[in-house]
Image (cartoon, rainbow, N blue to C red; front, side, top):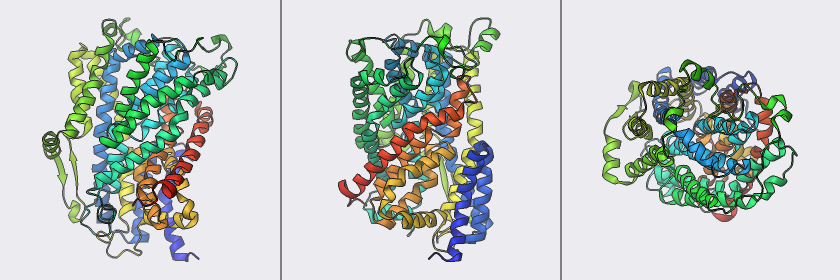
Length: 596
């Protein structure tokens, strides 16, 4: 029986997570309000229940903010490059290239949502695919509601490795397992010493590989599900038959993406699977379709617009280009020369439109694979704070080594490559800055909250703690006791819940990574498999995360239909959650039960 004291500590540990769920989901408040409140509650719980001093709370929070800054640098660079390509007209060219292959909406979903969306997720992450691909689909003539639903669904395999591996590299390697492995009792020490790994990075790379395996198996149905949701809920006949007709294409697209995806996860680690998998997949599938293979015998399209329900259409008329909500206003203020880049895109080749992302992929590989370059960038321009406020906490931000710096560099190079004018450059920076500002507050306080919840039970930090277990350790212990050997089945759903309330695979991994690790150890399950399921679950939750849904609806002018979208997205969420649970159980107890 749980004692009154233990139950009190469990309730205190639950308070920050409960606050996030109630305030963000129940009261529909943004992360910029929710996360600071959660931080205050976590700090109060740590002080009351674990006797964590104000100095230690402040130091843990500062370390969390510095770690969050690393994420923000990556996100800002990725968003800046995206908006640079939007302003230069490159996305118009890429869009036209895809639409020229086939007018069949099913083919367009495979190319633009499953493959192009996965590429954008691999490059930028943080909700950008739906915000970019949704308007592209509306520009091609999709009903805005259909565009949002399929855009949210199609890139789930890439989310775990989004923004060049940020959820795994920053979420797990730096935050969850990033303590000094020489400090006995830390998660890093358990990984390196007890697990027989060379480094925490090697352990996280194995997590990434198993996450890719789970995604590859479960994700075989995702291209089909994306097409099927479109034909069943938005087709004139409301039928699955048109989706069944293109199953050979959906399977071919899946294989074209998954093979390089798995190989990259195995040989290069968690940075590139989504980026290179989608890039190779796009090349293979587009080339095959252009050669006439896998094209449907008859083109499928939506019914006449006159028959579309009102809730399918918002403020933007389908089939009018990029589908940007501000397009009409910009065209008017520019006297007909929209800042979306139409004047540039008329003379830009498809190859030139893709050059910036080819440069990004090449630079990322060189800076991560070539030893001397990697060592120089990771040791130069590092902002470090050792023994923060006189505590054992230290943190550093490697400004030059972070992928965000490479994105900024390529964005600047793109100004010349795409012959952009000063106004277009200014607009790309304005849009990038306006998108990153809300994320600063949300991520600073989110990671600071997790740092407090992680450190409450660490002896090196809290010598007089009321208990030996920290908040997350205590919650994982109680959950493992409650679920027993079945815990791996629920790991994906726990990760999905984290992404649902936080709107981010990275934040979900930070919130629940140690929780899953400790629970797996308690029941004797392989920690890599369980934590990999957490990483996959973080991708699942993104499909119904409130901010992602709101952002996707906003850019197509359809705000207010959040409930309808979430209800439809529960179909792929439930499929992926249950299938992930089954695969995780098989891997944990049958395939690789001896893994640490």
